[in-house]
Length: 438
Image (cartoon, rainbow, N blue to C red):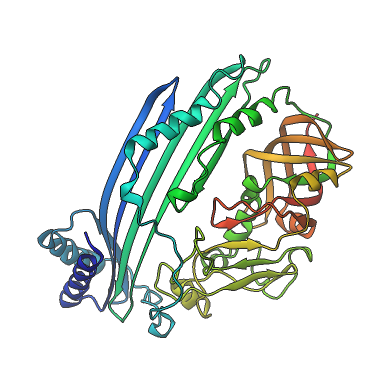
């Protein structure tokens, strides 16, 4: 379905909803295409391809609200879905806060080309995809007698959407992605160490296509002999690939729903110091070819660059139209785009060298964070650092504490930003973290 055809169908669906009793309506039409190849033991273990079109319509009827979705896009079937959806919505409870956004806040067009779509997507040879998966496996296959299994994969996808709201918004977006992933497990005494490496990109030509299997094997072999060490308080260096685990509870606590429902440890904290002076975090939707870059959010609100934390002081919440009305505040956006932590001056090796004693965390294994109090407990694995040198792998240990205290003890960020995500985080160093081991 072309973009023009999507707009035409969305306009028709909005008009159908208004003619059948809805006071407002919003329609999103999406099409997604993806493929993946997974290989194991020099054979294709899994081959998947998916093409999907879908329509979602938001219905506002007599101060009541519902959402209906379908992948059957013929008008006669859509007409039935919409009319029955409107009838069903009338049985729901009233909710005066359910409305479309204020039209003055909508994206009106224009802006920079964010460069998130690869026009060559459909021309990538399927055999090339298979060859890349086998090549990643081959980098590790037979390289060490302790190897138990290797799984390597190639995956890609593209998505496009248009959104039309009855009170004036019209917008569209499209993006592509490509990725490779390898997991290796080996014999290691009673344990079975396992690790991975992955690469991804928005453009096929920019995807790093070699070294994935080699790095996965290297990381796995380093974990042989891992175990507990003595409990204690010490600095924690968190690898960039896993740093999001510690930021996620903070971002969740900033959502409008969490604030309104009193399920956040950051209620009434705007303008107050939460983290150390080293914590400056920006939500930036305008990064060219960023994974979370956008001109508008899921409601159609104009995407804006916002400071979330400035030198540890909380500057904004993530609030959509609905929770903005319930809280009596202006909406910002209900979701993040690209989250960027201000970088420090040291790379990962230099951060390791700066620690007299600490633990480099390379993975989290289960655990949770209480959204109301901020108390957390996570299983971790990684490496013990002594006198600036990695001396042994560790596992089966936990960290416990409180998110406010953790970020108040944030010492510094590295320069090694993890770019395979919309959360552009470098490695992070925290002081005085409670580790439970022997």
